[in-house]
Image (cartoon, rainbow, N blue to C red; front, side, top):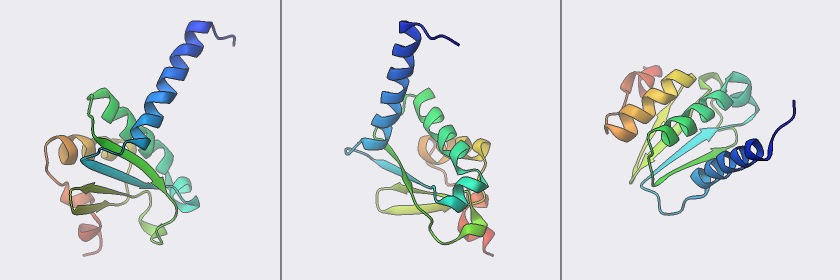
Length: 123
């Protein structure tokens, strides 16, 4: 499948946009996605993509999205942490749809989705 110059330019812009989301330093919120082997095999890559897409779709700024390795709780993967100010919430057993819901509810509406958190799962 041949790509035109315009197609390649669009791919380049999209890739740069995704990189910028990961490299922001002036952030109000940071999302750290576990991307160790265990996380990837459990479905972390589609969750990461869903987060990036939802942040972009909503035009949110001051959000840094980064990857980390294994955090040692493989049975709860895919998982990610949301840092807002000094507060950290760990979401576990995530799916792409749940990941999008976290962006909407936690980041946009400032409401933690308790049933997706490690505290609820570990009860």
